Picture 1 (cartoon, rainbow, N blue to C red):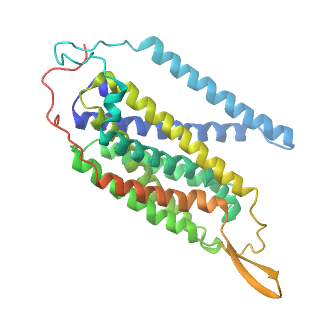
Picture 2: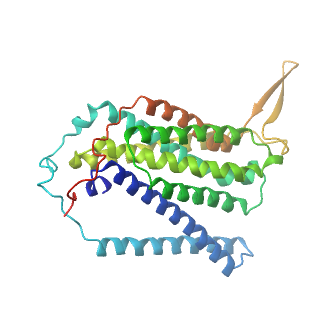
Picture 3: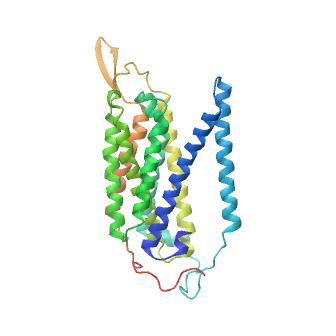
Length: 326
């Protein structure tokens, strides 16, 4: 939809950052619903706890359905102006995209970006509770800090004039920031768990920088070939869903084989095994640390390297005289 609303590169990034900002609002709204449910009802048994989470789910689904209904019933579907771009409705073959190097570069960057964001979010609550032994409130407070920072950065990104070089620069900045955050998460000991709140601020900033610019690279790829934007967005979305599912599946398969943590005072537990009268020492790092720290850091580093090889052309940097839609 962003591609069909405007051809202007800056406007497309603004719309994408606006979308990302309201995604953060939706995430924070879920925490607000949970806070209300936990305040209204008290869980004394396991069944009461299940009912609390059931009401959270029902409330979220109901509110989501209401907004979907408003969107479908109240949003008028505009038509594309044929006079502005004569080939805008011309059918584009799938092979057209597979012949473009930029398609594979953008697909790889988008997939890695989603891996960074989704895999880290999946293991965040487990990390702060199981690895850092923080209070129960931390599993809500740390994600809330990340979402708030992402929201603020998404709003600030709307005030900039965007070009292909700026997209690459800001994406690279977010990726490098995530590399340092991942390293910090990987080695953070329990006695310094409060430092996780500081890391959450930088994670939120990095997430916003990577998500907004990563999605905007799709818009640059589509350009004025509007009839192909559905294929591009669809294939990239399918790719990111499959890759995230596989990544979590692989990590969870190792979770079931992880040795028991013997020493809760350190982030890395040393295990000793007696074999042929010799003492062998091995180190174990929890899967949650890999999922939250190492995997996102590696994905960020690779995506930054791919971004540097891109040739992003944004010829529509000036505002259009006519709107694209009528």
